[in-house]
Length: 362
Image 1 (tube, rainbow, N blue to C red):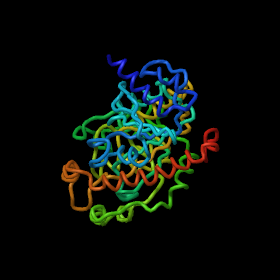
Image 2 (image 1 turned 120 degrees about the vertical axis):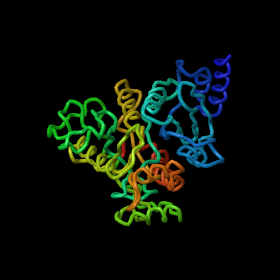
Image 3 (image 1 turned 90 degrees about the vertical axis):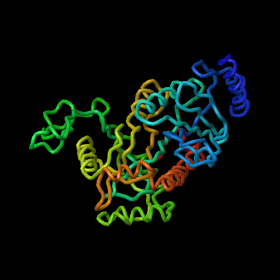
Image 4 (image 1 turned 135 degrees about the vertical axis):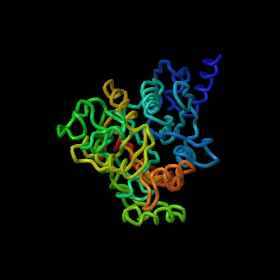
């Protein structure tokens, strides 16, 4: 019964969304099955969560894309966390992976292997909220990443048991403690480098966009009296990303994140944002690239600060973390920034597809 129902939904989808020559073939396509004429996709918007409904309530990462980018055609996606949504005119697709590297990796792999879609020329825009380093930017700011650094693949001992001459109990696998000067090659997914030319192009296209500001985030950033960059109104910048499954907080952890990015990038990267998913998403994309399903050089990562990664002066890390559990002060500003910045890139790509289909901008 489920396969019959799904096929019926796909028939509706094919009638609405498929190019005229593909309607007949697409009507027979079901999740997990072969598809002679897959739907073309120009851009995949990768979000990680939605708070409640997909529209009409408090917006998470996906909602603004669905409503403003015209992602009105629902496509069943039972092999993952959330159904897909598609705009047949612009050929933009939205996916909600679920939170964490396991869900982001499996959702990306499931989408990439789904024969209903032609993703060979698709650009991928990961657009999500993040913790943001007050040494570099303010909440509401949006950062384009080049380096994605995994914050979980490591050795660790409890901080209460570290030797006196160790700065921390966390260090790269295969090394003799955090004081071992030998660099460790990122061969197991510890770090990924995106297409730097594409990142720079996206930044150049969006760097002067005025981002939303509001009294709530103005009050929050005013507390960071020791961090001039944190007191700025939201802006677009370039900065790198740590993906770690543990929601961490505090000045010492912030120092670790900066050191971790410098270590794995050989001093080329600058930690700015922290979330959970990117290394899982991009790992799946690299595997899909090997079999020609996607092009890993067409991936962009944009993260906007919904909260700071360390507390303001006079506030403990524990108190700051517990306060954030009640809600991110910059959530609304962050999702608005993501759409304002990300949609500029999406509109450029889809509006000049004759140029960008075969030639990656730089």
